[in-house]
Length: 372
Figure 1 (cartoon, rainbow, N blue to C red):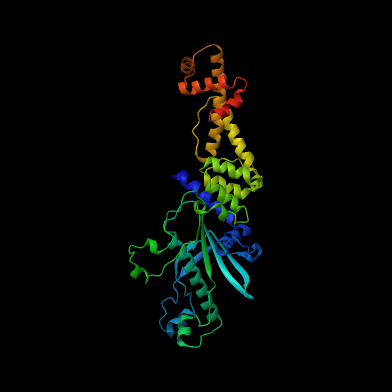
Figure 2 (cartoon, helix red, strand yellow; figure 1 turned 135 degrees about the horizontal axis):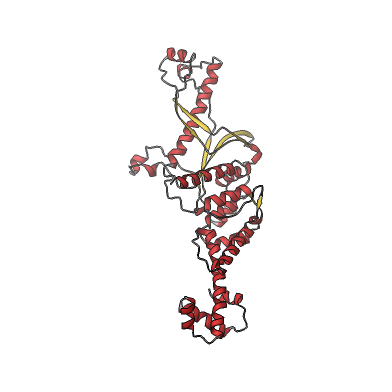
């Protein structure tokens, strides 16, 4: 369990660092808000403090005396403090007017089954912080408001808040099987009741659910990262993806690190290496397995990259087996006796005998392909 926590912690570190890149961050919001159209530019984004603290709005003030007393002391009572993964401000133009937005991204390497509540808290606490800031600004300038309501709350009728949008990016090939709304988490599912209970919806980007057409709407190497994660458990599709997409020949280090930790891959990334050739990495892993197969070793291997390694292992083992079987056949030994001597399945040796008869001029390396 301890090792599992350490590995999860490393995933959190590499995904947060990856999402700090303004271009990647903008790509996420351009996809979800604008269908991939490049409306948000990286230069429009500004890093913000990811720590959010929840305050009791209005504290315990019930009359003018409380308000006056609170002007002499710290009125904010901190309920809780949370740290977002990534949080940035956006200044853009809409209908010839300057628009301010606050954008947050939460990175998940596993399904979080209370994520709607978690995100709702982040957003609510940020709105609370904005209200508190406006209240403090008014009182710092002795702006008491135009009526008793403004005076007591400290928040004036014309005051407005900056919209907050939070998106969850999943970095797992598994389907997100957690709730996507607050309503899904409630014990009551009666429509009449739910109609009177405010809902909160999770905005989620999950590799499992993305089609190839949707993946193409990303314009940074986030496309390669999410594609790789999506197909990381399918050896054939993963190899096709890496070989077809030339961007995998020069993948940024941070992107490769995310792939490594979130898929359990074994891509070697040298210190100081900024561009990673994923195609070469695949071939190196396969070649390593091939050499191990030549030595007749059996290794326990895992997941996508280990499947590629196993493919190389089997090719190496078959080549060695064909070489040994050919010698037995030349000596006139029957397939049955050869199988016993080599401690192999008789059906496998019979297949090799048949191939040797059908293709007497083919080399052992060529016959390996026909074994599958």
